[in-house]
Length: 381
Ligand code: SF4
Image (cartoon, rainbow, N blue to C red; front, side, top):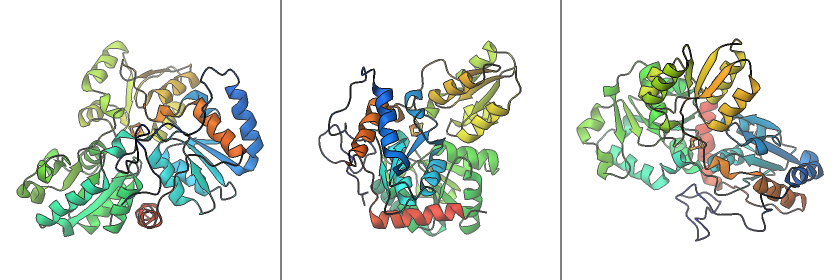
């Protein structure tokens, strides 16, 4: 099962199993062009109401300045769906987000990803074939009927569709607990895709399960590297996937910042590793992180464990508070950062000339079942 968009690796042909893509067709303006900002403004003005630009919180400043709305992946997909009058949706985010926007928007709207190489390493860690194979392992172990699959929003449309077909649900980092409660009312086990950390952190810290209730399924090992007994005993079967940005924060990062900034509050995203989340003061989604810093009293200090572009923007917005990045090393989302001003200008100017470039289209059956899993999420109590 593949989506309708061809994702190409370095111009060498299609690779439907990967989120990664290829450089854009046509001529990109050079990054050194001093008129880029002006060109983006002019193209946006020429397109007027026909265009709606979405900007994910982790985008660069040079791109986010042109966003009509900013948000996390789910909020942006909803915003796109709420603008049926805009035939062109330019999604400054990564591939799976543009897919979700295509699924939730009308057939008349076209979703454009300014650089097809803007994929997501986490979403890449669970391919359709691997998840099908995993399900066969669960069937062979005699437990598939007891398992409810949940996939994090950060997964390809194929995986969302798989989950929709098998009675499961999509979740975000804000509603993962509600999704787990819903799933455990239906079955005795959960297969959580593709982020092991969000699954483990929610199950253990919010649902009261123990680490011993969780096993990790490794897609590259025979039978996931698990025995039949381990699968039968487990309550949470966690996919071995993670975010390459949030997975970098360590317990050392937390200890180091506490020693460096006395009284600092450590605020992290639940995609961080379990020991990091346990050592933090506050845990929450990107929207929660933004709200917490916005509402914090002046004079307070915060070490934030999430993507660096967002942390830098929060620090700039609150000069009366100390806001630092949790780790000392640079930690941008490299794929999200593929969307830069030259790619944005190129896609906007192409649209203004009537040419739709880098359109993301999800094949109808995949879109249908992915929507089933998304609608179940929207109906969560
Ligand atoms: S921050 Fe992590 S989960 Fe988000 S797009 Fe980048 S790699 Fe994927």
